[in-house]
Length: 191
Image 1 (tube, rainbow, N blue to C red):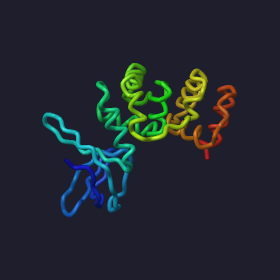
Image 2: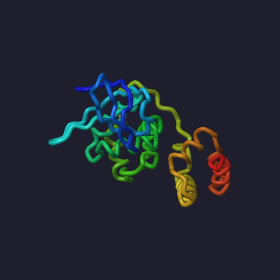
Image 3: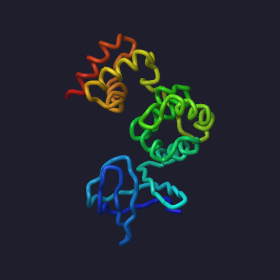
Image 4: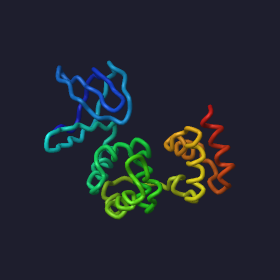
């Protein structure tokens, strides 16, 4: 079982790379893009199916452990788990599970029912991972206001992950009305 790889990127695509490790090329599914020739290192989850072996690479152990935890839930496959980690980030996922907030888990491939199932199956396991969960500004939002903000900005072409990042990093007051929050977020997104 492969658990860790360090080497040089030989070939890069949007969701996968080939890494040269002492003359052997390993194809690894990743969440981000890498330049060919760059030095990389990953914690590896080896996913074995009937007729396929796929390596999933993570820059941090916490990402890999969250991935493995998510894929332990029936109905959450590796692609969905990678998608939610890339879109939401590990801290928001863990915080959303601990706070029983399915909206904080919704992502490409993860709908309301699957998000609720993740919470039910994993809520007690977060503490066992040894990671602190912190109150996430996205989770403290009034959910109707949050959905209004996301829908309005998504219709302008912004991704949910971009919007969530601005909310977290710029510490925007989430107690004001949606229209004012949208205006504040747009100031940062347009920079």
